[in-house]
Image (tube, rainbow, N blue to C red; front, side):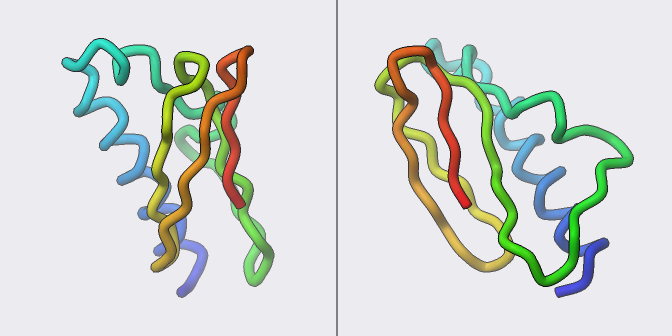
Length: 81
């Protein structure tokens, strides 16, 4: 998968977060500010996707043909690689 396709997947991921904002738990779910327009990902390296959600919330991320799940810690931070 080339870098443009990976960026498209991340942008799709961000769109999914925004689209789900109607639910109370999802309203506080967001990716880190790093994930924005014109971001650059290094090719052939593991990608760390991270952000914020209510403490204890389960977060599922689909990226580059993989699906990973994380749980937000007490400070609301979550991360998957």
